[in-house]
Length: 224
Image 1: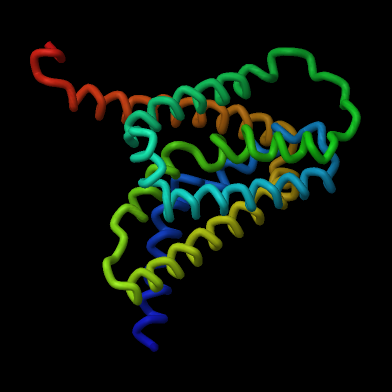
Image 2: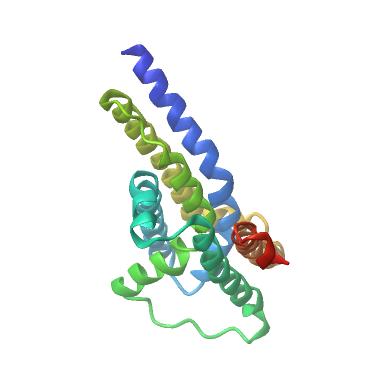
């Protein structure tokens, strides 16, 4: 029993360590705050809860059945990276240029349907859980153990690791305003612009990783 618990803990830490640098909730906190600038603190807290719940579902689904879904539709991870990279680039470009226009007056508080819609796209997908984290999650779950006891241990480890990631996302997004208050308005503006530029670069990197893999799979004559 002690060995099984140790294996679950080690597997959970592996999932957490593999996904955390790519999801990067602390780096995404300024972007989340910028894209919820028209929301009250209560609505922003609700957004943070929904984003963390959505991220939990997406990552757990990617670990558990992601490889089967891609195989069903005949898709490869490089294709997902190319398509997702384009979406991330577009989101980063829009956010980078958002400050060039005059700020609009705050609108009426968004409805529950609007919160749910925005919390999934674009706040969860692709800004928090993008093609990179999905591809890593699919890779982690691609090699399912053969025996049932080992499969159960791997499933518990994946569940625990994804839960830790979702909890980290919630904490970083829920208290993003408090974190950025210490930086000040100027520092926040600089951090948001920097985060938007980094997001654009991440999109380019994701796109290029997928495109390079696709070009590498072509016959040599086709590449020449």
